[in-house]
Length: 491
Image (cartoon, one colour):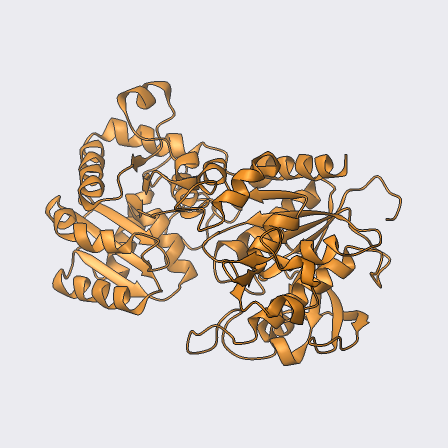
């Protein structure tokens, strides 16, 4: 490795905003490297060269070639920097391999929503090139001290490095969502160039198949995940999803570091998407955003009625079925509800039918709309996140920043970031939202009644809003924790 006092990190990820994004990982992959670079850490990001990535990067130069290495096609490594935005100028390496990445659809699925049949090859190549760049086999003059792998798509990189005989970087495997494990047929390990010794219980073998995620969890020097509570939850069933034994055995090498959010992008006092900006010292303009949201979504315009908002993947994991179950009680509070998101077709259809059944009271928009997302965070009175599990979650932090106290299920990062409103937490100034612990419609509905009671008490509600808006959810603290973790790997 090159001699320098600067800490060097290769951050390997399957997506990064604004080049490609399907969820929170895309945001984290931009925000964490940006925060680390502010701390003088030399972070460079490795991503697949999807067609949309190559189109969005104007200035690219080739820095290396990788010849065909069965079963991987020949590819090139391009160098560029992220375009304008909070993470502008972060150096990125792009794997240019048209046979694997130049296609329509999304990063992981085709236009019909089905997994690409060659995903093992597509992300095996991401892992393999990540491992090469993190070893003395790299064709580049820049070598990392640590390779930071994110989710199953880069999980083979620590395995490749483990079997590399020369010098290599330390490895960190980051779990963003353990439910996605990259499981393929057993012969895949050999096809992707891993030795027969890797295919065992103490390796990549997973219930007869092979798992990219398990490879990362087993072979990485350290493991991290995106909140302290989630780090504990995944060491037991059901949230360990079959890997709880391995994670419990590696507990001493497992860290939970809470995600941050880009606070300059999510700032109610400067947000360009809002009708009127507001701050903890002047919350009055918030009502203008509520009116605009009600008008935009076809709800009855009423500044007094309690308005709940939700922006989410419409899935069972996110608790959208609970929203369907408690809709009648919510309307009877009385309250309104606006939902934005996309996901499972059956739930989308049922939510649309619910809105049709309660015109002026419940509104549903299927799809993604950045401007509307910001308006919901600002215009709603309270934000709903009844997730069955949530490794970290971002919207509950956005909501608190926007003076929109969230209602969350007590799991993962939701429990780590939202302080339940009780007489005690109101007295000590920590209350910032509402937490329910039983994943039932009754518990959820009962908590909404608590929200309504607090909303009717303007003094309590203002205190809740201000408590949340004054919390520090920036990446500064998280980036500092990752820097310490990297340094511990080197020591």
